[in-house]
Length: 73
Image 1 (cartoon, one colour):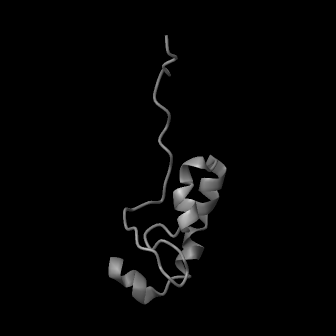
Image 2 (cartoon, helix red, strand yellow; image 1 turned 120 degrees about the vertical axis):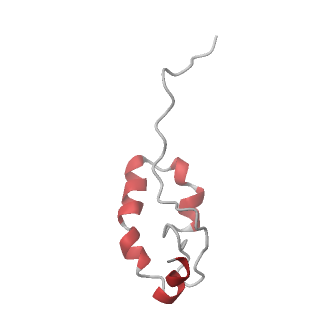
């Protein structure tokens, strides 16, 4: 017999907006402002680590030139 959870696990929060383009200068995704290593390891991070990265997104956005970001507006 297998142990079946009473309900499925809560979905993992993510800043992903399905615009997966990495800015070569900053190394950040121009959709969610995460580093590739963060995107790749997202499911292994704790809720607190994910929340800290998402909270830093506005600051990280400033590392990408507005001209590049305008492509996605």
